[in-house]
Length: 288
Image (tube, rainbow, N blue to C red; front, top):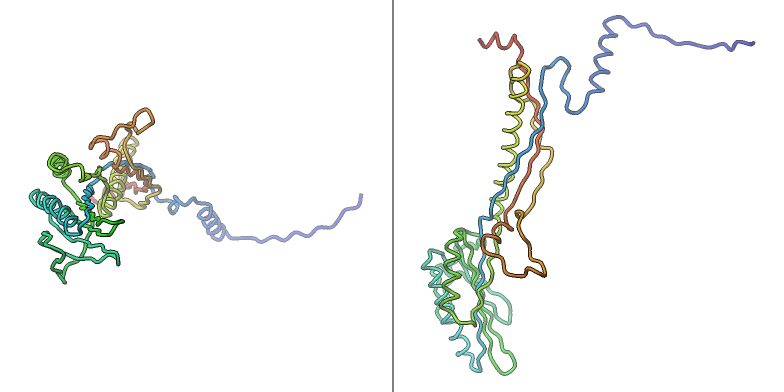
């Protein structure tokens, strides 16, 4: 049988070059969570969940009247509107700004004193509108001609941070005002600052849980936990509402205030990955 000639290429490396090449190949095969060779460490993952109720509630009250005379329609609405605003102020809520809506479009008018007098309101030039400010009020008025009559509507939207104060005002309006005044159902929500606080608390608690977990592992193995080397938030989940009954065709009754608050609650779950250093005996001796 004929033998086919072959060529072989070889390179002879010194012991020092071999060790360098092996170290570089080992580092290239490491996972993203790995650290340089020879470093003593413990890697743990942990999670935490934070649930918080809403910190704001928006209550809207609608007042309307339709009369043959324009003055009569305005007077009917303004009379009840004055009572609503005075009641709101009596409960410690500030009147922040109002909106007067005509057929030509909306005009923003600020009235720090909160009292409507006729058709004109003094404008504060230095005022800054902040609709979600704590304990504030927005008033919207709409006046138009419908067929042979004049119709005027006013809507008062109040932002509450004290839900007990809101509940007292709701009960007062239902008791003292007639059926022409519609008291809406409150809308609960979180402000942007509150949402960021919940997310931050969830992450911090997850990091604290990871440290406790790593400490227990080290104690079990007879090691000493050192400083954190890597802290990474790997996953964040957000959900609204708590586990509660929901409205169904067989259960259409209105939800209670507490059920509405539960449905508007926010839950944030944070998962983190943390790498801690393991203190060597030499470091412990130096510290001692």
